[in-house]
Image 1 (cartoon, protein in one colour):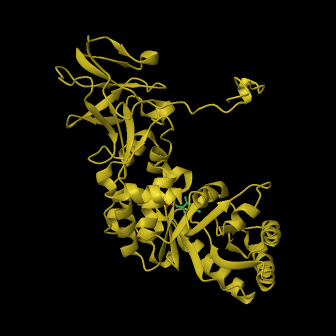
Image 2 (cartoon, rainbow, N blue to C red):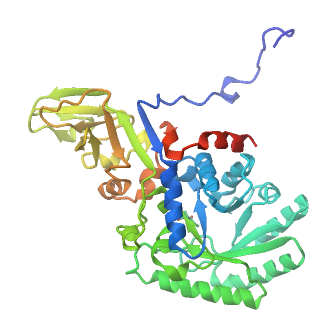
Length: 411
Ligand SMILES: *Cc1c(COP(=O)(O)O)cnc(C)c1O
């Protein structure tokens, strides 16, 4: 501005950057994230395994906030952080992270000179990917760090057994040329939460075979890793050199009773809560919410909760999941709407607008309870909480971290 007079922007409005849509005041609804519980869960798993722990922060740290969780993990001494997408790893590095970062998903057009230049470890499962990484290493003048992935049965993106020897041979040649360092060999489990199924043992056998084939081709990396949270908890044979810890770090059990059977106590990290926005008495025979999916069989008091499926509250929770209010567990009645739902507070209830409603988290109900009610897994319950819900990081939950966070993110 200044001497040139008022600025005129010829860019069509639709093409201009717009400020983010504001969320509600955190007092209305928020997800409270207990970072002390997060680092406490990581420490509990670390005590349980004789291996390094990689904390998985994909999907915005399963909905808990990538950068805040990253800094908390690093402050707690976590050496390895894993994410799915290369973009997530780049974002960590660009926020100032200096530790080990591992990413395993990238598209055919992804510019790999960025992650290679950022010294990010990359998963590789096809020879063509290896060639792209070798080229990126040449362009950025550094040795790329790779982890070769074998498909031991999940049928996602590991190398199939019949392509494994070729991938190993190419990787050994690329290592000899100085273009790459093969840091790891890895795979991913199908059903480590349910050991009544045969897959885990079969996969661990296949993994051992893949390691032997790699060794025959001169590939003997320092890190062999296949365990996720459930395997970290209950499959010692899967631990190898490193476990990739996701859901359990967030205090959600990877399977019914898995953490308890392992003797590991997990603390929920996310508490989803809101203010009660309205309270009123409805007469017997009144219907509640779209489609009249619930009808009061008595006079009762209902309350309005300002969270809906746009915020990640599953519509499958309609008429089935429960929330906590003033020490009572009360049911959702009628359909969950886009922005709100109704609970039955019960005849004569004295709750008032402004009272706190806890959907899940510390003190229960739990994300696992919601998962059971909605026919899904705890992973989905926490990860799907939407961007409209502000994340709060109460100071007491991560004492004294505020300053160090600022410093790190500005570095
Ligand atoms: C998400 C993910 C993990 C973490 O799994 P949890 O069950 O959440 O512990 C580990 N490895 C890979 C490849 C993943 O995609």
